[in-house]
Length: 361
Image 1 (cartoon, rainbow, N blue to C red):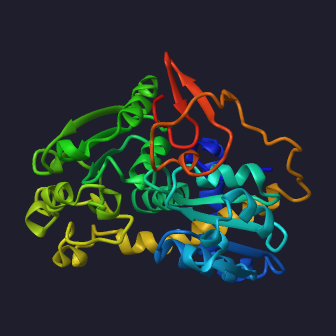
Image 2: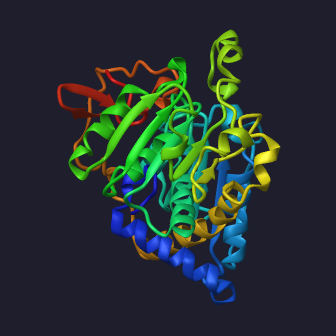
């Protein structure tokens, strides 16, 4: 059974196949309008979403399928104490594929261990967002014509930004990538993600950290903006202190290359001024539409890959993972902190990390 929980669940060649299929769908939408006829998508959204949920739903409808599910955990049996594992066991009886967004990191991984149908991670806490990553990759390919030998600046909330974490993982697998990390000290990229980039140095991946946009704007091929996410902070005063740290405006854009593009996973608050919207380099609304097409390609591909597949009697943990129920993850946002699941870990160098959220043990 193939799922998409993390961007690295797909090989570089598989990502290329999905992006190519998305481009074919864009060129011939009527030709794909019935390829999922009779198939049902279940959208299990435990956390608010506009773009991602509607993108998945419109994608399945354009493929000729139908949609069931919920857009608010309060309207589901989670209010009665039902676990993620039991929810997906039940939903597997009604649907052919699941898209899950959850506020707990690692919840989609738990779901994939118990579902009898493919599971797509539509965002888990501040951890990962692989379909946004596919959206970003398709947009970069369409706007820049390639996915290698690019300089990309990630700006804003790099600590809690799951879209940033996912895209860094994906871009690190291409040659000649330079990453510039632009954030205040309080929102620096987590240590485990810095380690992820370090491991890709042999492919020519470079990175450095800076504190202002102005010092790097002329270098960038892509500027990936993010909002400072109030919902990820436990300390409101800390949020108030950093929320306006980086704002992109026309003055800053004047220092950028004529063909640089600006991406943003949205929603934005005030980190990009409205005046930037009219700049042809502002690609974030084109990025939204690309999300629908790449999700069409992904769901169609996963349904084909899993045709006739059956889940293993014992969940397949995957290479390098092991269970140790004597250990505890220290991350309070991890699914293992609130649900009775096996504690799954992996080793990196001398460290042990939680498989659900990547926290260091």
